Image 1 (cartoon, rainbow, N blue to C red):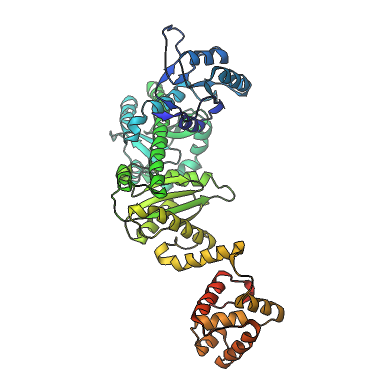
Image 2: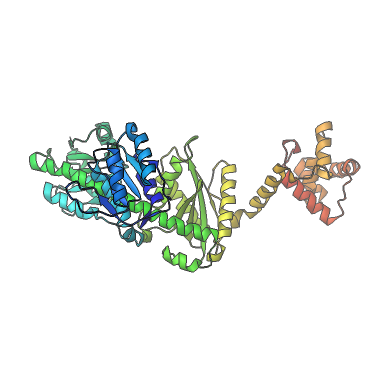
Length: 517
């Protein structure tokens, strides 16, 4: 079962737009109806696929007769207004698909979401790309590899005909080796895949252990989803070439359905993680649903961007963080606002930093990523862990993202000072008092009274140590303190006032303070 809002969001990734929605977006979708003009029997379902509809009015009318919640049409901007009007009148939500996306691809996504949602929530995907690769290898009589658009291996056939060294290295590394990618890029393979659906033969490099390859794009409408590669010393011909092009269309359907399944899996995982981070009485149960043990964990908060673009890089990082089966990933992640939150089991901050480093390494080089790590948290303490991770993330961003991400239990003092400075910036710092009076005196007379007070307090009243910090003699510090008492009425003998002045100095650091480390 999937809700209308989820269907609309997933289809939006394939150029499908919502024209009107006179029904609640929380409506549950449990069945799919495919329009059949040759069958007069009544068809009932929540999602109506208007294949072959003669007009918008005809499609919406048929959907209303089927008691559908939403109808899916294909068409351009010229029918958008009419589709919205017809949908509002009939009380049916209308979504309009780009004509470049085929009905078979749209149907694959819709059926995968609506009918196979129960399977994917429990962790079993609707398709098996390895079985498909084996089937293609049998039809083509060659070793087949299926890759995504980033040249990562999704599946490969078990027959090892033409299993050259490059293919073996690709399978072992689960990604095309850099030297092979560079060779293919130099020969225009990437440009060909971006603009053409025709198979391309690429001659091999026998001296480097690379036989020839025939490659074809796997596409959904105008979007490149990946590619299918067949190893062989010569171009494919006749039936073998036809089998490859037909197979690429089948792979496209599988990839679309896998993407829909992955999207649903991410949504389920994200909802459960957010429940833990917001606080829930059944935290142990939710952890079990996520496949995590109810032991100590850390919360990691991540933000990523490229220049002024804040969203594309974040989504790419979230996809990378949630790639793979649950049992093969150490943590569970959620996308909330402009941050990714990941619950990582374990107590060692070094493990969390290694996870952050691996995530950053998997992203393009131009992506700027910052992260913060909470202290060790029990299941019931995960909401506090989220706040700690957020504050450490802010600390990392303040420092420009240099160095490893801070962990709360190692950086709590910097976090406390950061809180104080934040409070001071919004007007919570005292406008009058010893520190404020000394700072005004420094600004008006060019004295170093604030720096002197800071050095004396940090040296715990040791005149010689304070003088060393300031680069002056201890007697000079004593004389300054005597003059400062006349300016600000210092009461250095009062322990409470000394603590208050230390806090005030930490919270209201100014460029004029001449603060020395």
